[in-house]
Length: 297
Length: 306
Image 1 (cartoon, rainbow over the protein chains, first blue to last red):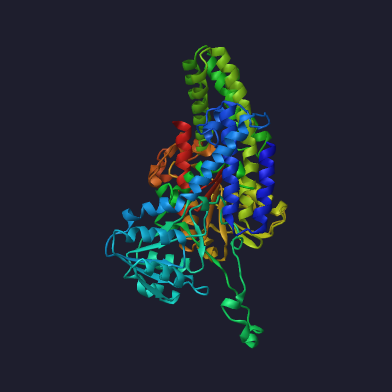
Image 2 (image 1 turned 135 degrees about the vertical axis):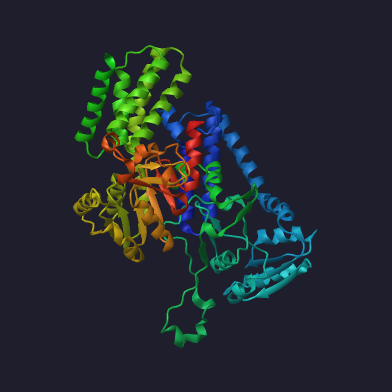
């Protein structure tokens, strides 16, 4: 019990410091779940679906509630071991995702992506070892990370084209698949991704092009998009309109949002280290990773 | 000779519950009445208990034919069977059942507050909410939002034929929330002004769709057409094992009030009281089991009934 409270307070402090970095909160929740499981195992409870609320539990539980206060000496060692396993899993996520590349990318396909994502880069590189395909990268202004992505991909001899964000819709009719990375996956299957992704998703939907999101499971966050502006991070508008244009700057207001919200209806498939899933299945994955009491840190 | 007396008592307890506490859900009152019935049942076997309970549930549905009462009854029955599997000695079994029944009732009475806590962060400051007819859960959610110092305004549909919307408007005015009552037909007109739609449910079906007061389907379709989020709030005991594919599939016994079913000659001339809203029109469901997407509902039902 005490351990969980300590971790929870630390987690609250860390998430308050940088709310847009949701992975911090996610990891804290994973650790809390690990502790609960280990405790439960030692306590002698069967670990079935005892963790979750359900109608079944409502009827049969008989009112016992976990208080986590009995001390168990081996608990510490078990928790540390479980956390090490978690670390190993985290380190292997990009490789796990890349291994699934061959199933999804076929020869002579045109793939579109936006900005720079390490996961997508590994995914495409792995597929390039056996297949020949072309990639179109949207440059993702104003930071233009698409350029870096294109450079890295072309080093692996993948035919890459860079284009501006405005041309996304125009080119979409020639594209077979859209593969993107994301910053966060929300509990309803929606995405928080780099600015420009929503446009890409809408264009893909219009042309019925499948939109595949490559993201490791630690990006899945049990939050819902309840307040429209809660996830937004704005950075200096320097990128959009440089400070040298001082005269104009005094008369207009300039914003530079970093993230975009993409609703779940536009996404076809999530590829993560545990396999491919539909967006409507996200709730299930969430219940496996986190405990409902921890959703609100 | 015992049966008519027991059933009359049962109906009386049920009605008394509803009279004394108008805020209680009819399903909770039904479960309380069934629990009382269980306590004074003098049978000796599980089979006997089940059949007398089935008879009791039938009498209750003849009094109040809503979906919620039926789902509560089924849940209670399931609860009995689950408990009876664990203990072979009948009297011990019965004691455990009564004890668990009390715990269940207590948990269920907290469910509205849990839902309110989950749902009110979704109401932003300055939001304009559209709701339909009279729902106590929605009222509780809006109350919680007011308590957390949010300012919003509400549009309520009049909800003919019983004008339930007026009742809702009165209750909301007491909470100092600016309310406007609109005609049922004005939903399409008002939808562009609204930020979100929040309705209760009488029953939540296996596909994730809901059964609610007539007019809900229209509101859901308009909301989808204008891209407004459509939120449903419902307690978990309202989950039923129905899977309607269209409006016709909803059983007649839920569509019409109990008295109409007994007295009317031709049901096609009666106006139905409820309709079915399909899950593709619903954005999120708020229940005491958490915030669920419509696809998660069937998972919950399977966990219970399997």
